[in-house]
Length: 211
Image 1 (cartoon, rainbow, N blue to C red):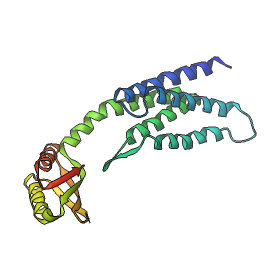
Image 2 (image 1 turned 120 degrees about the horizontal axis):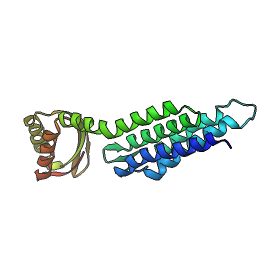
Image 3 (image 1 turned 30 degrees about the vertical axis):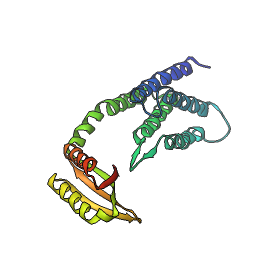
Protein backbone atom coordinates (compact mmCIF):
# COMPACT_ATOMS: atom_id res chain seq x y z
CA UNK A 1 0.00 0.00 0.00
CA UNK A 2 1.47 3.36 -1.07
CA UNK A 3 1.92 6.35 1.19
CA UNK A 4 -0.60 8.24 -0.95
CA UNK A 5 -3.37 5.89 0.18
CA UNK A 6 -2.66 6.77 3.83
CA UNK A 7 -2.72 10.46 2.85
CA UNK A 8 -6.06 10.00 1.08
CA UNK A 9 -7.67 8.20 4.00
CA UNK A 10 -6.32 10.73 6.50
CA UNK A 11 -7.55 13.68 4.43
CA UNK A 12 -10.92 12.00 4.02
CA UNK A 13 -11.15 11.51 7.78
CA UNK A 14 -10.35 15.19 8.35
CA UNK A 15 -12.81 16.56 5.78
CA UNK A 16 -15.59 14.22 6.89
CA UNK A 17 -15.02 15.22 10.52
CA UNK A 18 -15.31 18.93 9.65
CA UNK A 19 -18.63 18.48 7.85
CA UNK A 20 -19.84 16.08 10.54
CA UNK A 21 -18.91 18.51 13.31
CA UNK A 22 -21.09 21.22 11.75
CA UNK A 23 -24.06 18.83 11.52
CA UNK A 24 -23.46 17.53 15.06
CA UNK A 25 -23.26 21.09 16.40
CA UNK A 26 -26.77 21.69 15.04
CA UNK A 27 -28.00 18.36 16.49
CA UNK A 28 -28.88 16.82 13.13
CA UNK A 29 -29.78 13.16 12.60
CA UNK A 30 -26.53 12.38 10.77
CA UNK A 31 -23.77 13.92 12.83
CA UNK A 32 -20.06 13.74 13.52
CA UNK A 33 -19.35 10.01 13.36
CA UNK A 34 -21.88 9.21 10.64
CA UNK A 35 -20.67 11.74 8.09
CA UNK A 36 -17.01 11.04 8.92
CA UNK A 37 -17.55 7.35 8.19
CA UNK A 38 -19.47 8.13 4.99
CA UNK A 39 -16.63 10.29 3.67
CA UNK A 40 -14.00 7.74 4.70
CA UNK A 41 -15.96 4.85 3.20
CA UNK A 42 -16.49 6.70 -0.08
CA UNK A 43 -12.75 7.31 -0.34
CA UNK A 44 -11.92 3.68 0.39
CA UNK A 45 -14.42 2.31 -2.13
CA UNK A 46 -13.06 4.70 -4.77
CA UNK A 47 -9.49 3.61 -4.08
CA UNK A 48 -10.53 -0.03 -4.34
CA UNK A 49 -12.40 0.61 -7.57
CA UNK A 50 -9.17 1.93 -9.11
CA UNK A 51 -7.00 -0.92 -7.81
CA UNK A 52 -9.17 -4.00 -8.27
CA UNK A 53 -8.69 -5.37 -11.78
CA UNK A 54 -11.64 -7.47 -12.86
CA UNK A 55 -11.67 -6.72 -16.55
CA UNK A 56 -14.59 -4.38 -15.97
CA UNK A 57 -14.74 -0.60 -15.97
CA UNK A 58 -12.74 1.04 -13.18
CA UNK A 59 -15.67 3.19 -12.12
CA UNK A 60 -18.20 0.41 -11.46
CA UNK A 61 -17.66 0.32 -7.67
CA UNK A 62 -17.44 4.11 -7.40
CA UNK A 63 -20.70 4.47 -9.35
CA UNK A 64 -22.50 2.34 -6.78
CA UNK A 65 -21.48 4.77 -4.03
CA UNK A 66 -23.94 7.30 -5.45
CA UNK A 67 -26.76 4.75 -5.30
CA UNK A 68 -25.87 3.62 -1.79
CA UNK A 69 -25.66 7.17 -0.48
CA UNK A 70 -29.19 7.75 -1.77
CA UNK A 71 -30.52 5.10 0.61
CA UNK A 72 -28.64 6.57 3.57
CA UNK A 73 -29.81 10.08 2.74
CA UNK A 74 -33.42 8.96 2.50
CA UNK A 75 -33.15 7.61 6.04
CA UNK A 76 -32.60 11.07 7.56
CA UNK A 77 -35.54 12.73 5.79
CA UNK A 78 -38.77 12.56 7.75
CA UNK A 79 -42.11 14.32 7.98
CA UNK A 80 -42.81 16.34 11.09
CA UNK A 81 -46.46 17.37 11.05
CA UNK A 82 -46.97 19.27 7.81
CA UNK A 83 -43.26 20.02 7.38
CA UNK A 84 -40.49 17.89 5.91
CA UNK A 85 -37.11 18.03 7.64
CA UNK A 86 -33.69 16.48 7.15
CA UNK A 87 -33.25 17.45 3.50
CA UNK A 88 -30.18 19.62 4.21
CA UNK A 89 -28.62 16.80 6.23
CA UNK A 90 -29.31 14.38 3.37
CA UNK A 91 -27.61 16.81 0.99
CA UNK A 92 -24.66 17.02 3.43
CA UNK A 93 -24.33 13.23 3.30
CA UNK A 94 -24.39 13.38 -0.50
CA UNK A 95 -21.70 16.09 -0.72
CA UNK A 96 -19.56 14.35 1.94
CA UNK A 97 -19.56 11.20 -0.21
CA UNK A 98 -18.66 13.27 -3.27
CA UNK A 99 -15.73 14.86 -1.40
CA UNK A 100 -14.59 11.40 -0.32
CA UNK A 101 -14.73 10.14 -3.91
CA UNK A 102 -12.75 13.16 -5.16
CA UNK A 103 -10.04 12.38 -2.61
CA UNK A 104 -10.07 8.73 -3.64
CA UNK A 105 -9.54 9.71 -7.27
CA UNK A 106 -6.64 11.95 -6.23
CA UNK A 107 -8.39 15.22 -7.08
CA UNK A 108 -7.27 16.99 -3.89
CA UNK A 109 -7.78 20.52 -5.22
CA UNK A 110 -11.39 19.81 -6.21
CA UNK A 111 -12.03 18.08 -2.88
CA UNK A 112 -10.56 20.97 -0.87
CA UNK A 113 -12.43 23.67 -2.78
CA UNK A 114 -15.71 21.72 -2.56
CA UNK A 115 -15.10 21.28 1.16
CA UNK A 116 -14.67 25.06 1.52
CA UNK A 117 -17.86 25.78 -0.46
CA UNK A 118 -19.76 23.21 1.61
CA UNK A 119 -18.82 24.85 4.90
CA UNK A 120 -19.66 28.31 3.53
CA UNK A 121 -23.07 27.01 2.48
CA UNK A 122 -23.81 25.27 5.79
CA UNK A 123 -22.42 27.91 8.14
CA UNK A 124 -22.95 31.26 6.41
CA UNK A 125 -25.91 30.67 4.13
CA UNK A 126 -28.04 29.77 7.16
CA UNK A 127 -27.94 33.43 8.17
CA UNK A 128 -28.96 34.46 4.65
CA UNK A 129 -31.82 31.96 4.79
CA UNK A 130 -32.95 33.35 8.15
CA UNK A 131 -32.92 36.85 6.66
CA UNK A 132 -35.02 35.72 3.68
CA UNK A 133 -37.45 33.90 5.99
CA UNK A 134 -37.91 37.01 8.08
CA UNK A 135 -39.21 38.82 4.98
CA UNK A 136 -41.21 36.03 3.41
CA UNK A 137 -42.32 32.55 4.39
CA UNK A 138 -44.94 30.18 3.09
CA UNK A 139 -46.57 27.85 5.61
CA UNK A 140 -49.35 25.31 5.43
CA UNK A 141 -51.71 25.41 8.41
CA UNK A 142 -53.95 22.55 9.51
CA UNK A 143 -56.67 24.21 11.57
CA UNK A 144 -59.30 22.16 13.41
CA UNK A 145 -62.63 23.91 14.02
CA UNK A 146 -65.65 22.77 16.00
CA UNK A 147 -68.20 21.87 13.36
CA UNK A 148 -71.02 23.90 14.92
CA UNK A 149 -68.88 27.04 14.92
CA UNK A 150 -67.09 26.42 11.62
CA UNK A 151 -68.61 29.06 9.35
CA UNK A 152 -68.41 31.82 11.92
CA UNK A 153 -64.87 30.95 13.04
CA UNK A 154 -63.61 30.44 9.48
CA UNK A 155 -64.79 33.93 8.58
CA UNK A 156 -63.13 35.36 11.68
CA UNK A 157 -59.89 33.49 10.95
CA UNK A 158 -59.71 34.70 7.36
CA UNK A 159 -60.45 38.24 8.46
CA UNK A 160 -57.55 38.02 10.91
CA UNK A 161 -55.26 36.84 8.10
CA UNK A 162 -56.27 39.81 5.97
CA UNK A 163 -55.79 42.22 8.88
CA UNK A 164 -52.23 40.94 9.30
CA UNK A 165 -51.65 41.56 5.56
CA UNK A 166 -50.89 37.91 4.90
CA UNK A 167 -51.72 36.17 1.65
CA UNK A 168 -53.68 32.95 1.95
CA UNK A 169 -55.46 30.21 0.06
CA UNK A 170 -57.84 27.59 1.44
CA UNK A 171 -56.55 24.31 0.01
CA UNK A 172 -59.18 21.87 1.27
CA UNK A 173 -61.60 20.96 4.05
CA UNK A 174 -62.10 17.62 5.77
CA UNK A 175 -65.39 17.20 7.62
CA UNK A 176 -66.39 14.77 10.35
CA UNK A 177 -69.32 14.57 12.74
CA UNK A 178 -67.83 16.96 15.30
CA UNK A 179 -65.16 18.97 13.52
CA UNK A 180 -63.93 20.53 10.29
CA UNK A 181 -60.24 20.47 9.40
CA UNK A 182 -59.15 23.28 7.08
CA UNK A 183 -55.81 23.43 5.29
CA UNK A 184 -54.61 26.97 4.58
CA UNK A 185 -51.54 28.04 2.63
CA UNK A 186 -50.42 31.32 4.23
CA UNK A 187 -47.54 33.56 3.11
CA UNK A 188 -45.94 36.67 4.56
CA UNK A 189 -43.43 38.05 7.05
CA UNK A 190 -42.37 35.89 9.98
CA UNK A 191 -43.47 38.55 12.47
CA UNK A 192 -46.98 38.55 11.00
CA UNK A 193 -47.10 34.76 10.95
CA UNK A 194 -46.15 34.77 14.63
CA UNK A 195 -49.08 37.08 15.35
CA UNK A 196 -51.37 34.75 13.44
CA UNK A 197 -50.10 31.86 15.57
CA UNK A 198 -50.91 33.89 18.69
CA UNK A 199 -54.42 34.43 17.38
CA UNK A 200 -54.96 30.71 16.77
CA UNK A 201 -53.72 29.87 20.26
CA UNK A 202 -56.11 32.34 21.85
CA UNK A 203 -59.14 31.55 19.63
CA UNK A 204 -61.53 29.62 21.88
CA UNK A 205 -63.42 28.07 18.96
CA UNK A 206 -60.31 26.67 17.30
CA UNK A 207 -59.72 23.16 18.67
CA UNK A 208 -56.10 22.90 17.50
CA UNK A 209 -53.70 23.74 14.70
CA UNK A 210 -50.45 22.57 13.14
CA UNK A 211 -48.06 24.45 10.90
